[in-house]
Length: 188
Ligand code: SIN
Image 1 (cartoon, rainbow, N blue to C red):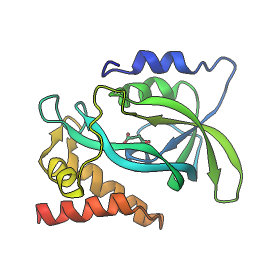
Image 2 (cartoon, helix red, strand yellow; image 1 turned 90 degrees about the vertical axis):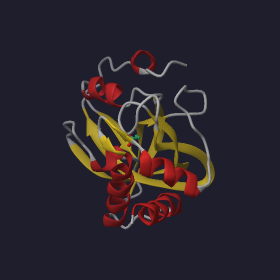
Image 3 (cartoon, rainbow, N blue to C red; image 1 turned 180 degrees about the vertical axis):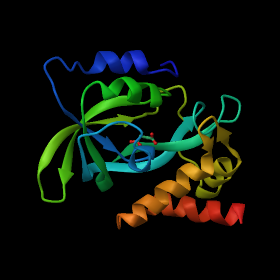
Image 4 (cartoon, rainbow, N blue to C red; image 1 turned 180 degrees about the horizontal axis):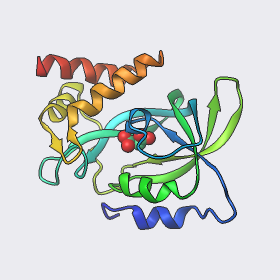
């Protein structure tokens, strides 16, 4: 698969006759909502976990020195907290561009705090994309993040903003907080 998944995503879901779509954000989409939305609310995705396993050549790193950003990995029994946004289909033009480095839109079931479930689109990058980095020890992940910078800024800010946002929502995430802890130790 090429790095740029924009064209693939355009073909994956057609929005003919659809006025509103739920989008689930679990990474930068939690704290950087630079797109218009009708409504947003906390939500959960069952069976997936956040992992810093995706390379970033276009936002938090460069092709020569990729950063590490989040994707979701399947994990039976796990629950991933995130923010669901109700958006118009037009919003996906900008989102497909923002998430073009290996992410594909998936249709998943989102669960709200009141127990209501809706279908929503989620950007997930799997091991078949060209920017995939995969698992590594926490210290190695944090070391790579500490050193990486890209057009959207320092890779470390991606982690620190997310960790702060998760805490603000009272959400637990052992992987994110472990990487944050290593990162704070390295940059101290
Ligand atoms: C997301 O936030 O939902 C996708 C990954 C990212 O852009 O950080």
